[in-house]
Amino acid sequence: MRDLSAANAEAFLEMMSAERGAAHNTLEAYRRDLDDASAVLKSLGTSLAQAQAGHIRGFIGDLNARGFSPASQARRLSALRQFYKFLHAEGLRGDDPTGVIDSPRKSRSLPKVLSIDDVSRLLAQAEADIALARDKAETLQRIRFHALLELLYATGMRVSELVSLPYRVLADEGRFLIVRGKGAKDRMVPMSRPARAALETWLGEIGDAAEEAGYLFPANSAEGHLSRQVFARELKEVAGRAGIPVAKVSPHVLRHAFASHLLAGGADLRAVQELLGHADISTTQIYTHVLDERLRELVNQHHPLAKATKSGN
Image (cartoon, rainbow, N blue to C red):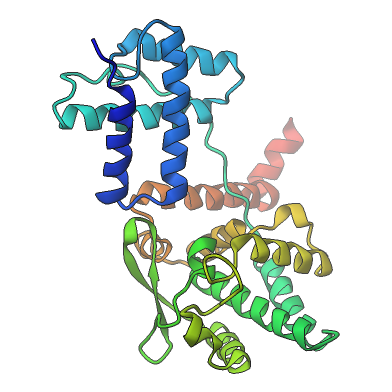
């Protein structure tokens, strides 16, 4: 029987792109996962298209033997689940060999979060850096970074969404941004006054360049806008000058800070889910675990009964 694994995999990736709007990086990750699974399954005497549950267990066992973490194993299995679900829906298979397989158990790590004081120090440093610039080019770069940082903390955008913001995204006289997230879904996020002011300063400096390029943060790159790598590097440089450990800081950590600080201030979980652009509220709920840990530490440190328990031990 002719093996249709490669053709089925390509059809699956085309569906993910066309119907679900999967990003290029997501598609490449699926492709790598399917290629790896195909190679292992071939060594087990079968193929991706014809594998049964026992073969899939063998693949998971191979991942474990190669030192993949439970989280990585679960991600690979998830890719296979999506693939076989597609084959079943298209009538290419009558069963799903992953249906009876449990996901490898993984511990849920809590996201790194900067304190409000840390973020305040970052913002203050970014603003102070502008006056300390040595020439016009450095001044412009620091004004741009300040605007990016204010926008990121004010909106909780993904860094890829931030650097690629189209020029015409401002709504309601600049009080909101229309952000296009995963799956080409648009969401509206409010702008803080400092973020609006920082963005206005930046746009005032670069004149018509942003409108001509079509992006708020144009750059001489293949995409036409600033790369996320450049912003991440600049963020670590500013963190270092602010006295914050650079290993503690990344664009995604600031997204975490945005969500955690909102929830700590009493924001509704559903509202935070909407602002972050999470399709599933369970993704947003991880931030409540961060708050749980902080509250537990607070009680243990300051509650009189907790102190009495410790002294009794």
